[in-house]
Image 1 (cartoon, rainbow, N blue to C red):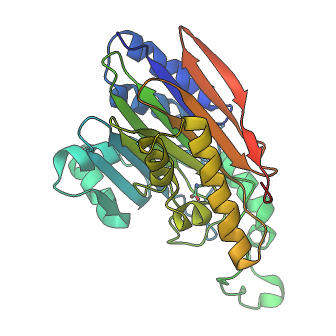
Image 2: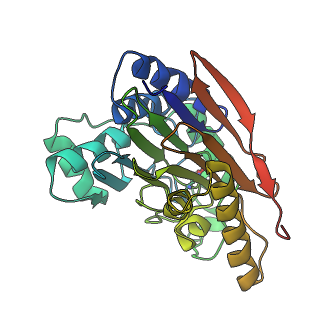
Image 3: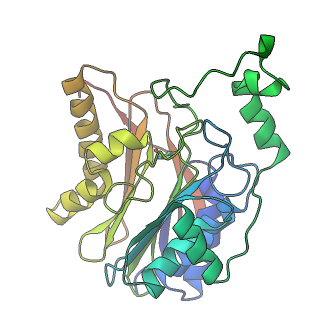
Length: 310
Ligand code: SD4
């Protein structure tokens, strides 16, 4: 019988991996287990980049993105830019199961959530608001200095590249099927309306029982640019192992940055193949750690960095 395996991004992914492994051991399907793992992180208010308690965008609105994918059927669902919903990954799953579509966004995704019985919530925590205000000192003032109108929003200033801790959870169940979930609040201080890789099937996540599963974290623009997770899965379909597949994706990110004459952004990939082997790699100075759960225990691993000249 196939051994259950989970791989999840970042040290906080340990909770996701533990949670998912327990369910897999009872015989739950891979997607159910991955979703429960991801939801444990969405509910953790100390994680400021996923679900409840995340950091808002540039104008102070907290919007969430997520997607799910079932490796047996290639069923998938996604939501982006959703406000006031605590569990966007579960909502993405409803899109997969209850609609003929794959991707719902913004207000309409929220209406769908309400129609599906999800509660409307106010997922802001005092800690997240305080941290947000520290980056936006002008917003602390009751009125702008000298009564001048506040400066308008600019569209060119950088986002916070250091808050990039999406949780992606990939799981293999006792039947050998694969499932994956990716959920995030996106880059902190992002422009309103900005969507990263995380809810995009093929960018933040891709899962196919016949080839493997992959997920991404980091600066989503660079992951979308190379079609990151699908790229990793297609490498595995072509015979590469999960480790090499992730390293090749990082090389793609590096090469794409080189073509634009910029330094590669912080990006990381995780992968799980149909036999249960795992791999991970990241671009230089990303310092990416991930959790792997199997055989009743969960370990934190350090991903191999792929320098620009590799
Ligand atoms: C995004 N990839 O929205 C996400 C951000 C993130 O770890 O935190 N990734 O670009």
